[in-house]
Length: 367
View 1: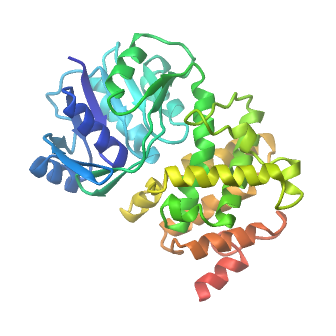
View 2: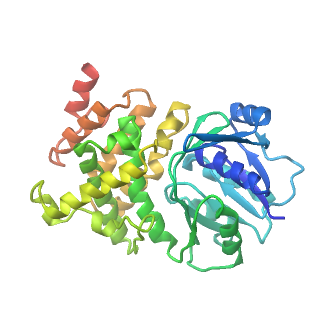
């Protein structure tokens, strides 16, 4: 039997652990959150899908059991800031034939490969949403599957085995272009997850605001510019969202009514309707007192853009704003997101003061 270690039991990790246990696999679930451990060990994993719920018997541990035998797969489902620590903790339990699998948003495969080696590192791009309503209770907020692949684009038997494990959760595609799939998802997350953190609402409500959709398009445009400079061949997200197309072009900047721009707004509205219950995992992490993953999303873009001299002012402002929220200097709200939009209309050369938002943010705090 394939032995699986899951590091992290938040919205994604807890749901994956529950479903793998439900399908009869040998799963060891580890979380450093004692409340999750206590809840799961008392009541099992509670899974909710489209308002229907069920309990799945299982156990959780606050640390890897010292007597644990080697695992065929280590599924890393922590937030990005904790992924290296989790990989190091699991490394002694990973045999030569095993693999660590990165479920994080961002570009975490490179960091995990530094720990486990590129040969034992697999990326899993998650194309569905999940949240933890309270310790041990997991709500799948949208349908979807996975794209899995290796950093060098090769395919081996471990990918086929991993696909078989994950397919009861959702459809699984094996990609030879993991980098392109990752950067496409990064563009989406830099917009949806980060703007969702600032706006403090689920995607379905935020996407109704035209200014929020405009911000999302501008964020993704900056990310695409960096990816293209890195010669990434971007993949369609969930087979439908073409990032090369969605990036704003000259015709989109000439006025609000260009046919191309209207089509892009319509696509975002459709995405918002499909994933309307999606809530930012980064905002949930902040609420639990954890470090936000913004440096692994928008921060990743800004640092790589700097190496090429590519301006990405909106991603940088978003990064500063999320850190201010984590420090409790700003409160997430639709109003705060609107203030970000107003400030970002100013020339790039304008001095930004305060907590990274400028005059509009100061007015918001004063109010």
